[in-house]
Amino acid sequence: MYTQMEYAKNGKLTEEMKLVAKIEEVTEEFIMKGLAAGRIVIPKNVKHEINSIGIGEGLTIKVNANIGTSKDICDIDLEINKAKVAKKAGADTLMDLSTGGDIDFIRNRILREVPICLGTVPIYQAAIDAQLKNDAIVDMTEDDIFNTIEKNAKNGVDFITVHCGINKLTVETIKKHKRLTGIVSRGGTFLAAWIMHNGRENPLYENYDYLLELAKKYDMTLSLGDGLRPGCINDATDILQIQELLVLGELVERARAFGVQCMVEGPGHVPIDQIAMNVQLEKTICKGAPFYVLGPIVTDVAPGYDHITSAIGGSVAAMSGADFLCYVTQTEHIGLPDIEDVKEGVIVTRIAAHSGDLIRRKRIASRWDYKISEARAELNWDKQINLAINPEKVKTLLEKRSPTTTAEKGCSMCGDFCAIKILKQYMKSEH
Image (tube, rainbow, N blue to C red; front, side):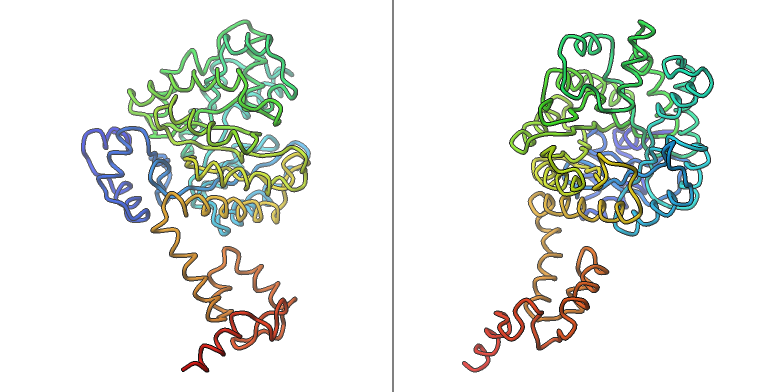
């Protein structure tokens, strides 16, 4: 059985390619060429029945929502509800980052109950199981890691984050170049600690060909994780981040040669003037591989507002060529998000993605803006509500702040002095 990339390389058009081309309003040949070159991915495990989405060059920007339990808060029903709310709010994909409770059960419930493209980070489960079994994360074995990855693949997970770019060389660099916040990636920390403790190479890097075999068997997309992403503005675009990116560039080429779809994850905390450069670096070093960014968060001073700081960065990243935005909620540096945090996080990240699409896919994206602007010009409040990115919020605010608004009357901001209404009156009197 071929992967989507292999079908594309052999000129074979699949149903998944046809669907993505239709959704994106591009030719089927465009999708096929992008897949063959590794500049587009269609993350869909052969064992998972979902509608396909495309991520990458020339396509609309996609949005991911992270959910998952923690050791302190482990309510499986709550996480399932978060998954459903995220999908309803417009998330294109979900990632289950559970670290508490029965992780296998949680993952399989999401796969069964929420029909959406799903990603995971298997190293979390492998490390947690090792800690429960041996009382130490660094005692996990290569078999523990790869057995967990294979279990995720068999379950139907569509893409996995794998921190292959942290190797013995990068760990030595970590020792020499101190950071203010060190390593903030959990997966990156687990593997860096494992390398230091065991004095051995990262199993995901050393046995990368075996990882490719597992991914190929299920056509599971690899998301090459940025284990050394900067965790604060002070650490942005430093030698550690760039050194890991160089390793990932090598691994992208090896995956493409093997027929395995992959994308590359990116920072992190980045000042606004470095975002475009970071995107260009990834696109150059990784030869156009789809770029999946967390945020980026553009300032460290706004805990409680990091959904906003990341949406600012996400807009710039999207405009500059990033293909896939991972949401950040307002509780990013505070605690586990609740349902409302998840919903708001998805919506503000969709705003960032759409802002980028207005630059990159203007012909398609601008239709939405045109329609809502047309409704605003007509003082058609019902149409404005229906076209809003969050209709419920607009309806609630309108009923609360402008309860007497009608098609003929402006909102409580301007009332009888509504500029649109006044101009309409005088334009009519001219005729």
